[in-house]
Length: 559
Image 1 (cartoon, one colour):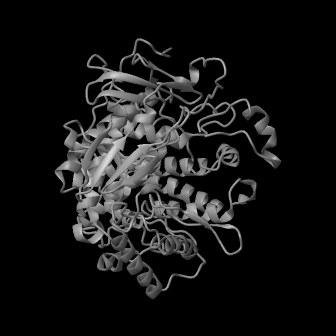
Image 2 (image 1 turned 120 degrees about the vertical axis):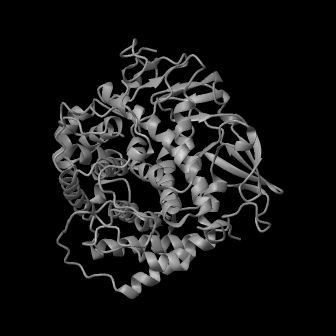
Image 3 (image 1 turned 180 degrees about the horizontal axis):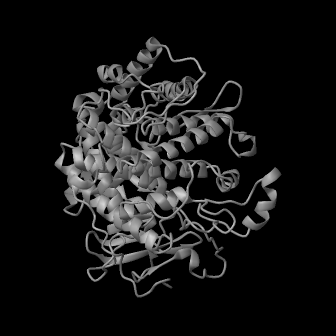
């Protein structure tokens, strides 16, 4: 995140803030289609007693296996909605189209084919994540996923889309028992774990829960779940570097994969999405019929619990490791000449002197996940504060991070059965979304269409956690998800192995915008989020006081 540019009433605060800168379906249904340590003598965190699968869920989670029953929020939460309700016929038509779209494109098979890490056929621990900065190169019946030749960069925030896809895959597995979604979810839980286990230098390194930005293992070939030949080529990222927000270096004797290249310094940008995914993982470990999901995600939860506890125990700093596996705090490490400083990329406290408890949701989510209870922080309703708006005006993506930490905090309150806290946080989320629906985005370096296209999935996530959608909000959701379906149905590369795709180099990620007839860019929901309505249908926290964004029975019938 970064908080340097703004105007108007915020300008005076920014005189001081400018001193800081910072980081940045069933198998034939949804399957195939056509080195200074702040505390150098501490080697770990206190034993906080990670729960077994029977203890991951708190009070009265009122779950069963049906995706279309009336599982709802266990308390009343109502807002004043003066907008017109969605007609039932329109909702049913949208939902049927949505189910047909996911089936037509083979959504979960596509995600499985497009993800990678290390394949099980290598004999090493398998895992997968959703990468950035990668080309897909087709040559005959083989598609190679080649990490691009870049200067001191590559895959820095891959856990944002990875966490988004993980939540959707877990929900689809729990609700519909889709084999491809189950395989994807298990593989992604292993992927999150790999970002911690990959930052273990050797058998003598005792700390397995500090998190890398990414790890780069070894080149290999394998056959995908649907029998397609695939090559992973990491070669362009086999070198070391140091820059303002991270370092890359080699561990020659990692206990799990042998030689690995580690990009250290897990910035907080991805952590909110990861923390929110913890809530769904807890449900999955307790409820999934898949032993692979229960086993892989249980390990991930235990590691994330220790990761969160470490953040709390180190005054809300996210520790990392150096090339010698020594834990340290990157923002406090003196940078070499020519590399700028950044004080807040790895912590939740930099701005407290100016804006007390500016990142309170972050802190409380870490306390809940790390220790099973809230810390001594006063978050109010958890809604947007002045610091968030200052930060947003400097760096638009921050809006997603704030929403994610808020929902992570809320999810933990729901799982703990703390209904009073959950109500307060829902009130804050109503305030947040009300402000966001009417926000003056002209102050941002993005268009209003981009702003609203990003709001659509944010609203769906909120609705999956008890937020009562208004009729107008559902219309916004439908506008941008419908546009996604219209545009992505025409994309030709859902299956790069198809005989209809010529040899060549491709971006395996479909576009999410185009130039419209007016000359302005038109946006839609990204492929990493377009499956999100399945999460709403699974959710045990739906609010009957709000408008449903999807008819879950019609959706299931269309699949």
